[in-house]
Length: 274
Image (cartoon, rainbow, N blue to C red; front, side, top):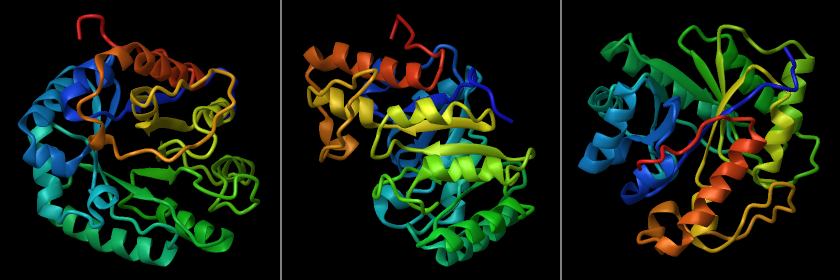
């Protein structure tokens, strides 16, 4: 289950106007997309439809991070159909395992009433280690779950709690034999150590992808992501607040993306003709 040469597919998040500049992949592999933007932004929708046609696996987020609430099942299915998506991330409640399992179970029933050809991804949460683990075990044994996502560590970098330290959490799952071969495992976002965490996570061959806006946001702010660190998590604006981005920042943004991909052992590049 472990190899030093494993890689994570890196899905970059950027404002709609800059998708071709920073999000386009060569070759096309995995993209994380926002359901509400698919529904309401034609340019966003067109870009990811084209990426799906190129062979990318499209993961539709449910909107809770941006909107404070998840979109309803019919809207999620509609968004997925519009861009040829393959997977939907189920609703989750930050740091609340029981509420997350309840919300995901309910949403899954509604989604499965509408379609049976979309994979469902559950997000693991918990207020402490035991509730985090119960949430994980619930999803790992649920027949409707095809993928599991692990959110970034936001606080308590050195904590021994699985819910607060994603590096410790993935190591625990591997060491305890809790990784399920039938599931796809994703990392959601970069945490307190940014891309430096990925150098540790690549030891796990069962981890598939990570999505991140940090290289674009920090680059737009003039902050480089140094390959060997240090990495200091600073207060940053939301991704859509960056538009417009000064074109003079483009080289730094691309360098930041390359830094994250090197840390993840990800061979993807931005197509030269974007």
